[in-house]
Length: 297
Image (cartoon, rainbow, N blue to C red; front, side, top):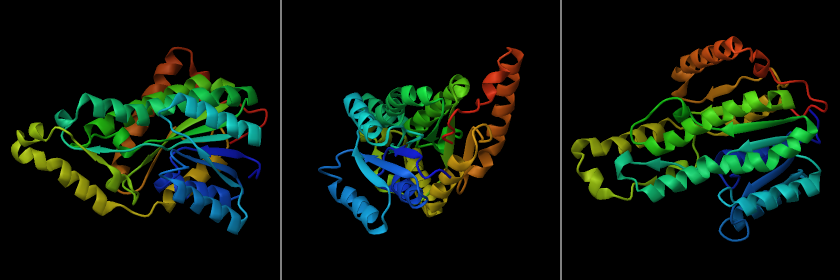
C-alpha cells in the first residue's frame, strides 16, 4: 500500500465516516476527513480527530464541507488538491435517514434527503472527477445501503435515495472505466451508528394516524433494525480491503453486515443481466477498468 495515497471522506463527524477515517489513517493513508459545521456544531468532533492525529502521528486532517452546498464542495476539494496535490480515493459517506409512512413526509422533507443522499454525491463526484481523470486513476466508494437493493416499509424515501445512488454509481462505473477510474458501492446492513438517533420522523402526523395499525410498522422496522446493529469497525475494514484491491478486481457491489446477505442473489442476477446487455450492444469493454498510469487503487 502506497502511504501517499490521498483519501477524502464525506460525513466524518461520526459513524462510518469517523471510523473509516481513523482506520485508513492508521494504515498510512493521507486522510482528509470532512464534515459540515466543523467550526461550530462539530467543533468538538473536529478537535477529537485532530488530537488523535497528533497523539498517534497520523496523516489525518479535517476539512469543512457541506455536500448540499456546491461552493462548500468546490472550496473543500480545492483545499485538498492544494494541500496534497491529488485525490486518489473519494468515499461518499454523508447521508441521513427518514423513518415513517411515506405519505406522511412532506415534499420539503423528500427534497432535503435527496439533496444530501443523492445530489450531494453528484456534487462531490463532479468536483473530484476532473482531477481523477487527469491522473487516469482513482476510486470512488459510494456508501449505499442494503436498503438500496431491498425495500423496507417505513423507509420509503431513504430507500429511494439509495436506489438512486445505486444506479448512479453503476453508471459511473461504466462511463469511467476507460478513464482508469473505478466506481463501486458498499451496501451495509444495520450497524451501530448515530443514524438511528439522528433520523427524522414524518412531519405530517395526521396522515399517519389515518393508517391505523399500519402506522406502527415504521417503528417496528426501526426497532428490529436497531436491535440487529453491530459495531462499525467491520465496515471500515472492508473499505480498506476494497481500496487495496487492484482496479478491475473489485466487485461493483459489496453487501456487509446483518440481514442484508439475503440480497446477494439480486446483486448476482443484476450483474449478469448487465453484462449480457452491454455485451450484446458491443460495449463489453466498459465492464473492465483500464490499467491506470499511476494506480490509485
